[in-house]
Amino acid sequence: MNKILYIFILSLVISCDSNDLEDTPTDEQPTSQVMDLEATGTLANETIEKAKEIIYGRWNLSNGSETGSSNMSIAKNTIVSPTSCGFEYIEFTDENYILGFVVDGEPFVAFGDYKLNEDSNGFVTSVDLYFEIEGFTIIIASLTNVVVIEENNEIFATFTIELQVPDEFEICNDLEGTYSGEKEEAMDESYTSDINSNHYLLVHTWTLTSVIEDGKDITSDFYADVCYDYNPETDDEEFVEGCTPATNISLTFSSYGTYTFMETGSSEGMFIETDTWSWYDDSQTSFYVGNLDENFIITIESINESDVVFSAEEDGMTVLYNFNR
Image 1: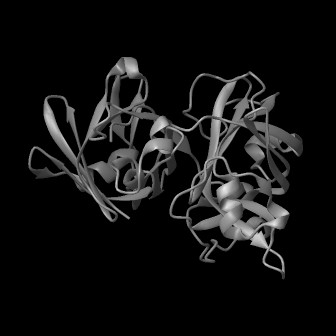
Image 2: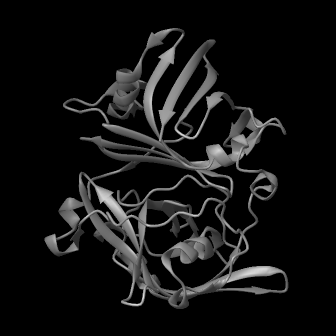
């Protein structure tokens, strides 16, 4: 996948004490085959399966202050002594969340798994947002009192959020409180495509298995890409001494036109890229990523419930990206 913008997330272990660390959520949570994109309800009255359907989607929390970019990161303090922090959006897919912040006018993101907690009656009490760092997992936010309603043909969510954002952006913890956000419109294909369509098959989280460039296996080079950093003095990418490559690369597509590309396991920390995607045409065999003006198109060579192969033309060569679920 063409990496339009890499955003480095440095290890947060040094900024989190042992009480902040959580076990990775392992509870198997039911998954709906087809999400009701207009589901409403109060999570406290719902089971996990229904609650996932209710929160599924992208919720605008920006109050008109969007940055115009979906590329974000949290954790590495690239802003000295930040003075302001606000929410931009929160998006829930079937498996992950994306929480967008705006810090001193710059966009940042948290991305990871989420867990719906339930009481003894099987009703949802809260939603925990997990953030993974070098094999450890912390809860950076918890949502309670989640209510989703329809009003004047628009869907709104209200919720209370508690935050444990790392020290580098401690100012964002002041955002704790109750919020209301309008649900954004899903992609047209999310309403019109059936379960046999490429759209339905694509909207999941995929794990990279290999990269082939003009018949040559360059998978190891691709995993090591995180170890190269731009040097303005030489105007070139240079290998970071002592760096170890990523051990896992995943790609998530959402029904709301967002993709998230994530590399983990490198000694350099975590890299995340989030941006937009959209179908090239009704055949659903190729799609745009990022700005449409850049005309970067990915082709689906093959896809089924467990595997997908993408191709792209880069520097005059054909690159094949193989993923599975």
